[in-house]
Image (cartoon, rainbow, N blue to C red):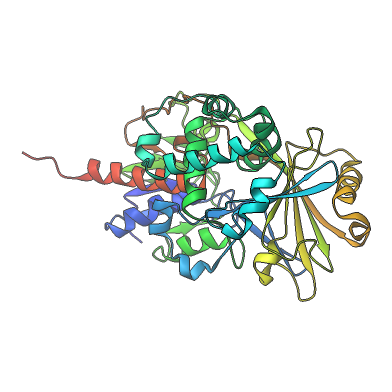
Length: 415
C-alpha cells in the first residue's frame, strides 16, 4: 500500500467528510480512529433489540452541506412533527409551527405558551431568517441567545416557558448563553426543514460516509500518541509519514498530540440520557415533549420508535429522556420516574429502564464571539464542529473546508 499523502486523525463526521473530499480529488488518505468504529459522538448501540443513540440527537434535513454529501434517501429519514407538547404543572399544551401545520392554527394561537404577540414575533423571526443566508448570519452581531430573544421583543414568559426548554435540548444548556448566530442558524434550519431520525439510528450517518471511502483508508483501533514533525506516532510505536496531517479531534486532544498548537480551552456541554422500554407509546405520534416547569429535572422526552419501528422490537416502544448536565446520583432514576408520573400517570409504572448514559462531552460550548484558532503549525490542519457550528452540519462543513484548504496547498505553484 502506498504511503499516505494526508493522514487524518479522528473518524468523526468532520474527519470522514475531509477524507471523502480528498479521496474524491485523487489524494491518498489514511484515516485513523482510536475507537472500534467511525462516528465520533454520533453512535448507536444495539441493546436488547432496541437502537439506542448515544444521547438524543436529530438530523436537520435542511442542512445544506451535509445534505449534499449524504444520500438522504438511503438514510430513510423519519421526521418529527414541527412543534412540541409542553408539560407544565401537570398540564399538557401543544405548540406547533402553524405555517407547516395550519390545522393547529387556532389551538396554537390559544395556547398559554406565550402571548399572541409572542406568536406573531415567531412569524416575524421565521420570515426574517428565511431570506437571510447562512453566510450573512455568521457576520451579524453576536450576543447570547437570551439577550437576542429579549431584544427581538419576546416576553419573559415565552423565553422561560418555551425557548429555554426547546433550545435547551439543542444547546444542552437552558440559560440560553449560546451564540445568537448559532440560534439563528438552527432556527433557520428548523423553519426550512424537519428534525429527523434515520430509520436505523443516528450512526447510519457516519456508516454511510465510511462505506464510500476506498478500501484500506479507514483504520479503527489506531490511537495516536503524538505528532513528531511530519510523522504520526501511533500508540503502538509505529510511525506513519505524510505531506499533511489533519487533526479532526477536539482541541484539547489536538493540543496533547501536537503541543506546538496554542489552543483555547474547549468547554463542553453534557447530558444524561435515560432509555425506557414500554408496551405502548405515551403519544402515538412523532413529536417531542418538553418541560416548562423551572424546577424540572427532565428537559425533553421523545419516542424514537414512533418515528421508526426499527428503534424497538415488535410490540414495544422506546422512550428517550434527556436531562441537561451529568446526573449520576443514586436516586436519579427514582426522581425521573416520579416526574414522569406527573406527566403520564400510572402507565409509567409499567416502563422498564434500559440504560442511562452519562455523556460528559456531548457538545462543544459555543459562546458569543468565539474566535476560531488559525493554523499555526505548517502542514498540520485543525477541523471539527468546534471550529464551525456545534452541529452535524458544522462538523461536515469544517471537514469539507479543511480538505479544500489542503487541495489549494497541494496545487503546484505557478512559475
